Image: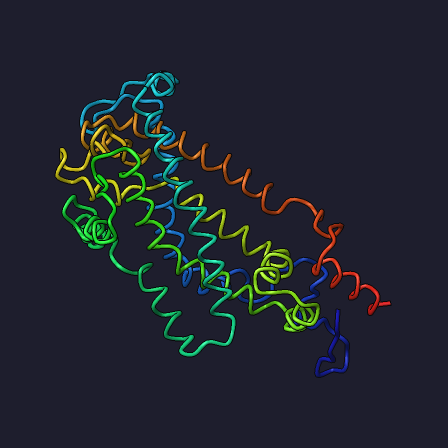
Length: 340
């Protein structure tokens, strides 16, 4: 502890200075953290009310039988037992997976090709980027109404097919026509968004790799699959995971596209457009079985988690490509030699 001299010249303790090693709180103490905590508190309050609480309450609600007004009746795991035996639910699960496969695989491939083309030297690249992103920010309800007129029996899609000598397709009346029309809408909405994600990843790849591929005589497709894809693995993983999460939660397209059929609750003829989320909405908000809908939501969460893990394992994988012959392997070995 520091000392000072009193008027008589005797040393006294300086009480104005505090030894920090003693664990004493400095002047102001923890109060100095109050203003910044108050500044960020609105986010946590809103998240607790509109984020955390609904999640916790839905878990609690999945064990209750409740119509939204009367008293809750605890039923335990019976909701999940009824769900497992619900044939309409499993039909919705199958529809969701089929639509997800028909939309996600072509969408990611087209997005990668578009990103590769935008990465090359093309004129008006900025305008193309804006045009590709516009569908993602367009109201899906409005565009579903437009697509509904396009896919009608006398709509534009069948008019184009008849113009080239082909028969019209029952886009909104046949099994695969319904699933194809919903898939086309999903592709239209998300291909530009994922293309920009891939483009950002492409711009992070050193130009020396593209130059080395051209020197070795690789064409555009070889460059894409042997040089670009191995280095875009984290970006592809992100796009695959987000596309899986979005694809398994399809709702607006099926609900609005078949809104004339019982206010969009059946998913079209034969329930071929019925998805998991659409069936959840039907049970919870049309038939007021909120406990059953909550159980369905948690089962959907489990399905999404499983498929996210599968995508993670498939896309991330191991470093097996380092041992494969080709331009990517040659570039890695050349880099290793230069490092030595």
